[in-house]
Image (cartoon, rainbow, N blue to C red; front, side, top):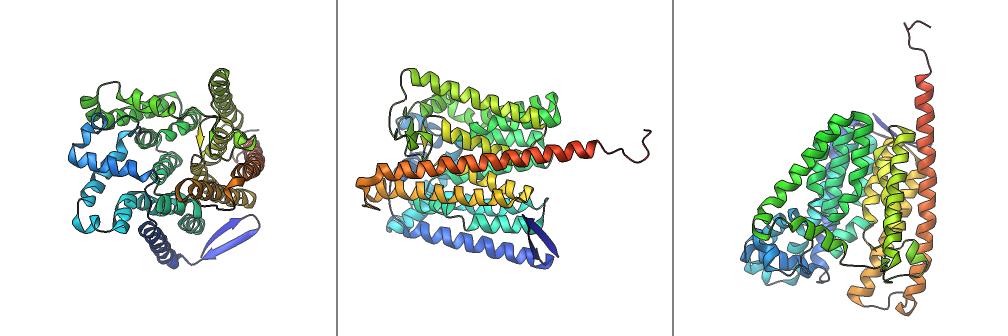
Length: 425
């Protein structure tokens, strides 16, 4: 019998049933995603993926940055490899004859990576408790934000989430160089992965020392260079700088429909030019300084918990956040819930799931379907109200996270102060 404790509740499952339930969870998650992906037809943002897929097939994948305007392709290159197969699928006459099949083909990799995340959640978490890992896999399979993001909207955040979880699972399994290698890969999937680089580097430094840190950093750099290299041969050595800094400067606004502090202040789509540029830089420096303090003060804190708290802070307080940028927090909170067995943190995960789902839903309805969902003459007041709720939720998660970190530190100090048997007093 496997047990999982969360707060005062205990959940049990027979060991022989775990594999069966995992298979059922994965199948159910796949059916939900694939059905929605097939049924929901739209081209908002997906027209970019269609262009990339067709260009990869027709013009050659390594020439794609030359053949498309940079405004049409500002993603790093790893994501283009699966979209090459998407382009081949779109050439199939059967697929081309049906809008639903086109949608399924364009969203296929996004949905498939999210399904793979269900499996990865289980294998990453089972070292703590198999019952808890199964519980977490079920939660991700039914997570409405994840389903909406990859299956209905068709965004590529699921690819980023898969690799980020793989990175920190490798770290937790005492494989820092593998973690660094995977982080290099993740950063060629989506720009937002870079936010988690300082979390990983500090975690490796504090646990494994300077030598392993440099090895992990070098492995990550080489992996990123390996993926960029064939594209750089065709588009120039400056390509990584153009991709990353070009994408960063593409949307110079305080917030872009993100339910954060600036959304709560009614500053949606307000430019962040002038002195605000320096303010934004100062905020980022302060957040990184706060991250360094957490690792120094708490020595070896839970990386999932720190990762969730850091990304929450980035989303809440830095400029140029989009509505989807909070979604990586979900996977880190879920992992932290399993590792820490915290009921309070679980409700934080539920709350962030709810608010990110509403952020996705309301923005999608407004921009894509252009419906008067809840009366969009009231869109700004609705955004302000939900942003205030998200700020309150951030404070709740932050307080709970700090409480857990303090308790962990006290337990480590208490354990260290107990004389070991056989030691001379």
